[in-house]
Image 1 (cartoon, one colour):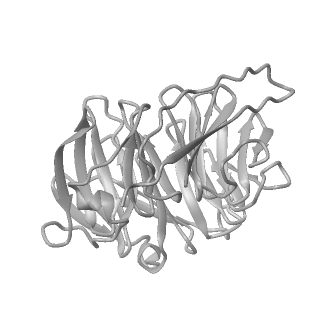
Image 2 (tube, helix red, strand yellow):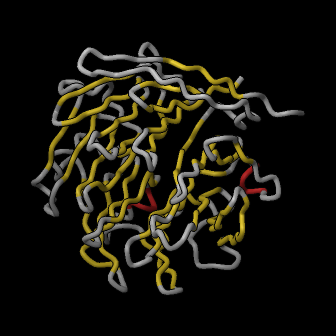
Length: 340
C-alpha cells in the first residue's frame, strides 16, 4: 500500500510587538510521514532532520523525506528517539529503540555504516533503550527500562542511582543530560532526578526531589536539558524549573502558569540561538525571553496543541513535533506538515 501524502499548510502569523513579514516556504510534494504522531525530531551536523514517529523513522533533507527500508529498526515502530553527536569531526547518530541501541553514519541520504548493541553482544542493561547522551569525554549514558548503562573506554557499568534509593531501577527514566562540568542529570517519572559524575567510576551521587530542591514542585520529571554548558532546565507536571549552580537547595527558579506558561505540564524544552526558551506542553507552546512570554496554539498557526518535541535547526528556526504532524517556525511564521 502506498504511503499517504504530506499535506503542507502555511500560516502567516504577525504579532504587534514584531515587525514581521510573511514568507511562504515552497516545499515539493513528498511521500508521507509514517504516522502523524511525532515522538522526537533530531537535527544532525549537516542540518538533516531525523523524525521519529510511533510507526517508524525518516529523515528530511529540506527537499524530501527519505526512508530506509533495509533497516528494520527504522520501520517497525519500536524507535524511541535519535541522538546526533555534536562533534563536527563525526556524523554519528544513535538510534534508541526497543530492540537495542544502534549507531550509524549518514552521507548523501544513505546510511554508510550501522552497528547495534544489545544484551546478546554487549553489557547494556536492557534492549529497551529510552534515550542517550554523550559527554565531552565520549562517555555514553544510556537510559534503559532497567536502569542506566554507562559505556566508557570499552567498559560497561550499571547504575541505578544514589546508594539505597535505586530510583533509576524503580522509576522510568525520561531524559539524560550531561553538562560540561562533568555532572550528569537523569530525570525520572516519579523519583525526581539522579545526579552524579563519572570519572572512571561514579562519584558525587545525589538525588533532587521536591523535598530538597526548591524549584522542583513535583518528582514527576518529564525532561531535563542542559543550556549554557551547565544550567539545567526541568519540565515537570507542575511547571518548569531552572537550576543555575551545583548546590541542591539553592540556585533555583520556578515557572508556572502564574508566570506565563500556557500549561503547567511541560513535556519538552529547548533554547534557540537567540536565547529564547521554548516550552512544549499538551496545550501549546510558550516562548520566554527575559521573562517576557509569548504563547502559541492552533489559533496562532500550530498544527496541534499537543507538543511532544522541540528542536532548534542550524539556521535558528524551530521544529515542533506534535500528535498530528510537524510545525516549523521560520521567519516568524508557522509552516505545518500534516499527515492525511
